[in-house]
Image (cartoon, rainbow, N blue to C red; front, side, top):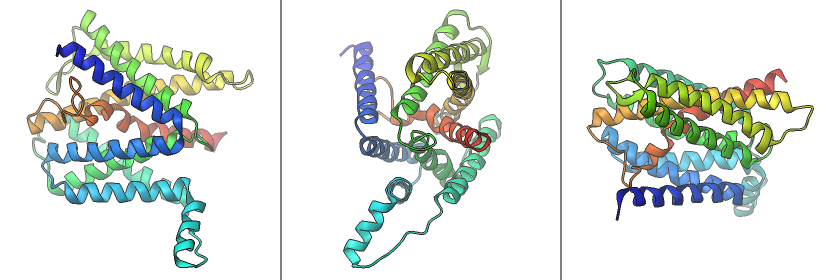
Length: 296
């Protein structure tokens, strides 16, 4: 099969699966990203040469537990009580849990940035591998799910809008870079990325953020200006931190000596290759939402 056709078909299937699961129900969205998490964990373990059994079991149980106590606390209590004939109440402060998870993720994100720009790092210690697994792979997937709930209830428009911004940034960074790119962004890690492409991606992402606010979110007139500010800020976050996330995964692959994180998507590589931007962006967007909630 022609490589371009193969790439187009696998990309279309991925987008269709993603959008369908997001729109269909909260459960289908959570389950799909749980599956993506398991695949991404498998791929990351291959990248850094970790035994896969414990990491996959750990991320599966942790993701499930956090999802249950975050979004299905009452249902979980009822299920436990029906089995044990008891009257157990889960007294977990989910806001405190979220804060601890966010701080952990941000600390690992900073470590990832140092890892990216430190040319001396050409190997990864075992403790660091597990730390990256926690804060670079597992926790960001949890925040992808959490930001889709916005301030209160599940809102598929939030996560769809985020993916539209990421796809816009990636597409126009490539097109602008290919057309007029002359200055390399970080050549030793990603030789094809250019400063012009990076700027082009950010500019078009911000414009798309404006369009998302006006044409897709369609906020009430009293909230319209604030909505535009929110979505253009998210677009800026996507443009900057999405690119950093892409570069970080590229460094992991460069150290491992491989081109793609996996082969599950013909022509595109692995799940980690498709989600490298969003997993780095999600915790920052979640932090942004918390700041908005605090000051509003």
